[in-house]
Length: 165
Image (tube, rainbow, N blue to C red):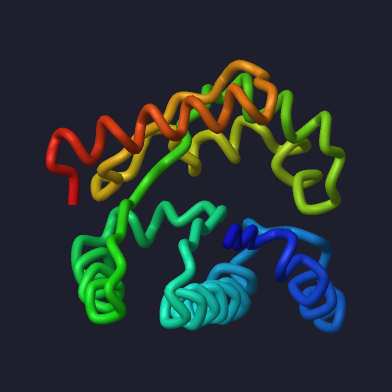
């Protein structure tokens, strides 16, 4: 089960921002303090629900603050373990240039502030893997879905062979 945060929650995040008369800015204080916590709590609850049904769950979301918090990772590991699942904290790493190009190509409202204020955005946004990510996948190059799947499978095999979480 792939849980893509933006596909799942973008509409209601946009509606909450609009209801407050705010632009689609995922870097605003309101987003980070009020909306993002609800969005990520909902994402985690959904993931745990699917894990309780013995499904494989992959979360596609920028969990940088969470993956820099050892206590959060340990709590999630325990929750997964209690459901018979294994947590593999993974991070897909790309260059700043690749990130900018992808944002320009997808032309989403949520990226407009970032693109318009790129230098400020980059000062606040590290593109290095968070400290608690045990699986890091480099993905600067455009790939077919098959090639991307092979890359992920290779990384997962390596993580299991090296005793990753």
